[in-house]
Length: 263
Image (cartoon, rainbow, N blue to C red; front, side, top):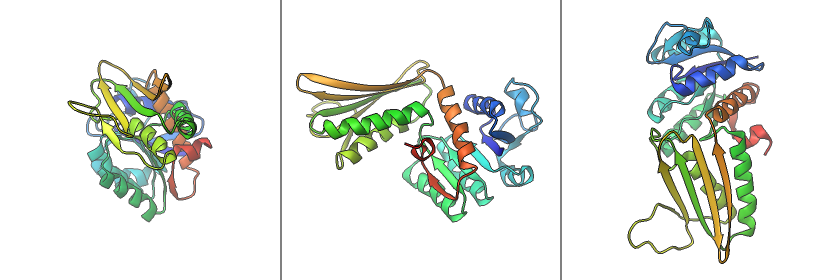
């Protein structure tokens, strides 16, 4: 049984992560962090019953992680918070499952460096849906045979999502670009915008869309569309808890969801 902590535990994703943790046979909730509801039982805050795990302020992270024997911290908060809290946890010898999107390259590298320098295990992924990584696998295979067509990526998310394009859309572009030996990206188009050999990436924001990603491989007279749709955030929470159980038993180092899923 792996001891797991959650940041942003009072939030929508935090509550869903906690629900998945307590239903898992592989992990146990030992710590919960937030900026509000401090001292309250996190299970009561999440409306899932008493769990005897109090909400702790992030400023107390080091002492709480050590006192509770937490082995893995799951962080799905916001970039500026994750950039501070993830390295703090790694410095305590705690492994990391980071699902925060919108990290700058500098923030991501700082977290990666904290994982390697503190000799812990960690994964930083924009998406923990198992289906997304099958989606990526299919994109890579398709790109091998469709190197001379126009490629467009369209993603759609709810109107509260702050970053664009999504990390998953960027991940899809990276998979395809790697297969094709490197491609430029164009984010949306306006005015005179003749198409070249780039990958176009487009973001839609509206309503309560959980996450839709479509890749068009458009040639002369035909096109192929490969699509992934998340129907609820459960797809992400379930995958993150699966990742935490795996990371908790892993040797120190940086891992990907492909490693965890055997892809």
